Image 1 (cartoon, rainbow, N blue to C red):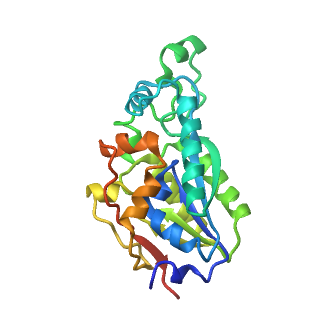
Image 2: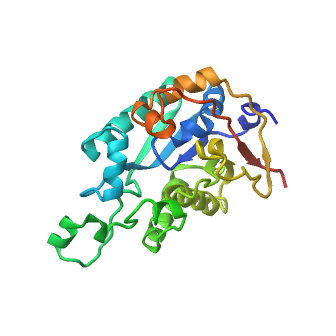
Length: 255
């Protein structure tokens, strides 16, 4: 199959993106090509901050050279809108808090939660919680709500692309689980999460019952797209230069 040609049988291509750059990083070239013939929409789930930042959240803000989380996420949403617009793709932001900022009812006194923000974080630390790939029980209700929201916004003639969940970041794993849940009622394909696939942390698997699209990435055009995400390039790659990012996208095989 060739990437863009194999997508034309669908009314719309809907890409589920955990964060405000994941879709572009992982399948931006494919989206740009497909958008010339088929409407493409990126639904980004976790697009905001919430509450007083934990130590892990503060470390992330320092990596992004940002002082305040709300201002950073406002800038990231603006970057995403401009990036997707540049390739003719529609972006929808769900407005849910990033795992670094997600909160729960903890029962601790307010003063304790103010002094120690980790007490009411769904994921108190990045290294011990977010990067371990274990979705919190507190997010199970969120998963069900997301499934209904996406079902209401799509039709049976649409193709949904969801991440494979490489890298074990809980937001990526949760979005992968959302794709699996949606596959009961929708046509769902998959993409390999970048830059996790680039780093070789794990071999890119071929999902059961799926076939890889043969799609040639234009590295110059893709690098141009990624540079729109100015707050994230240096934290992701350690440099202002965007590396070549291959795209691994899979569609379900015909029954």
